[in-house]
Image 1 (cartoon, one colour):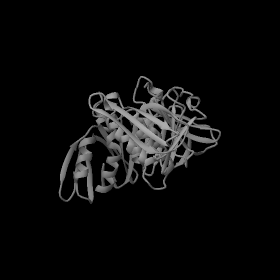
Image 2 (spheres, helix red, strand yellow):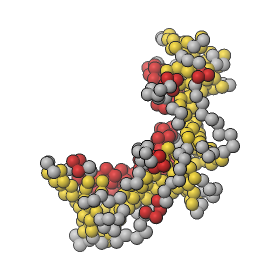
Image 3 (tube, rainbow, N blue to C red):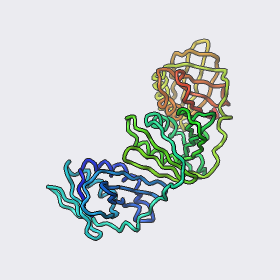
Image 4 (tube, helix red, strand yellow):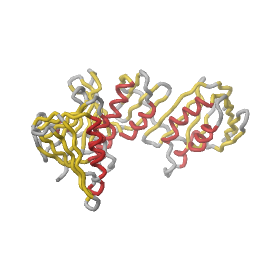
Length: 363
């Protein structure tokens, strides 16, 4: 293998893939990245057996070849180099890297030992607008569970219903749902939230299309010159829609920034009670108040003027409420509930596509 690449392109590729390489695995090869020439391009790939990311960059290839080298060393080394052309040459398992100022050799391992995710040969595909898909992931991914004892809840469920394309995540204490648009073909994909968190890093802010290819076991996402492949989660997603109340006796419309502020202040006094805060909604005073107690430190009540229909109270987790408020757009937020025992709904009154549910705590 002998080629030339620019430092900027190689550094960008390494930043895309190196995080996936696992230094904690029992397989040492998984802490390496795979470098492989393909025509006039160099592919840079990493995998942890559940996720694989491949980034392609243009290069001037004199001799084809492949090698795996330590991901962390390569990424930190290349990021330290000045911009310009890098000469790369492979001699057996030694990778020689040369610039006008630096000459280095990195010891590698044969590419034959590197695991490769099976290719999706007979899957279905669709294209999604990058900005819409990115926003949807940002609004739902944090609601997925991190508890591996319930694998189904560690994923984001992407599916179609009545020609609408949904993305939803829940950890059974909160739920986030986004309608991404219309799609006529039936889709049911349960994708690990960890894989989609990596995908979020790869999606830019431009109008690029994201091509999704999938079969019964895997899904791949192509973003510009980068491809991410992930295994799908096997299991049936819960019928969550029956948990979302259709009508609410109590609705408070509040300025979103104001509600973020009073929730933040109240959360400071809620740390010793696992983030528990009590929302009091008063129709007569048109006031939404949040009360929190720190048993040894003190207590706090923060209030905001609101447009309110109905009165009542509910106790919820302050972190969950802040996550929901930050996920919303728009100037105002609607907080809807039916009292202490039923789920609360948080939404942007100007956006019907996003729904966020938080389960109440015992007060």
